[in-house]
Structures are given as C-alpha cells and as structure tokens.
Image (tube, rainbow, N blue to C red; front, top):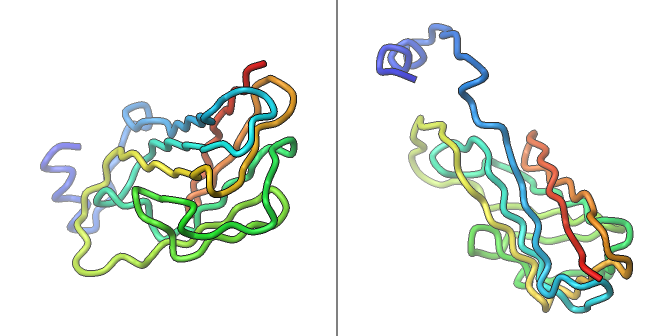
Length: 155
C-alpha cells in the first residue's frame, strides 16, 4: 500500500486493495519426534498471517488436535509457549486446547503486515503422536482467523 493509500485509510476513506496482493495465511505443524505412537512429543505450530504491529490480536488461540492424538486431561500453561512466552491460561477440553493471551499494553501502531507466530507445546505438555502414520489436519483459530496446519507422522 502506497503513502497516498495509507493517508486515505488514516483519514477514514475507503481504499480499494487488490486481494491478490495480500498473503494467504499458512500454517505448519511439526512433532518431535515425528514417528507414530511417540509419547511424549513436542509440537511446534508455525502460523503466518496478517498481524497488527506484529501482534496476533486479542485471541483466544484455539488448537484442534487430531482425534488420534494422545492428549492429557490437563495442561500447565508453563508447558506451552506462544511467541516464546507462556499464555495467561491453557485449557483442554477433549482434543481442543484454548490458550488466552495477555492484553496488549501501551500504544498500538497502525501497521498491518505479515507476521509469524510460533506456538510450542513442550514435551512436558504430555502430547503423543497418533499411533498410525499419516498426515493429519490441525486447525488453529487465532481470534477470527482459522489456519489449518498439516501434521505428518512417520511410520
């Protein structure tokens, strides 16, 4: 977006933006180790989407783990890192993990640009890979955005 378009947006005018120029959200999931039946495993989710000032937004972050994934009944917030820091809360209901983020403090800029958010479930979280090798969809909702990562488990 050029300077004139930015000035128009700041002035409250609508500016046509070609959707082809906006990046499509993407997500990647990697389990370590990545073999079928491994437990405990670390799970790293890497999400790329438009962020405001490099922040993911208010959240929450909702991770829908595959039905075949081994999931503990509870998870300590210290066992999950969002952007390198523990979330305010981490709750599990079935195969759904909900993470709440702290509210942004201070002045927020007006820059909307592609950013990367990494979510790490450490081995201490107690997750386990599905017992059957394959590729499993792993939807992640960040606020109103939904990205689908693919978790590949090897034999």
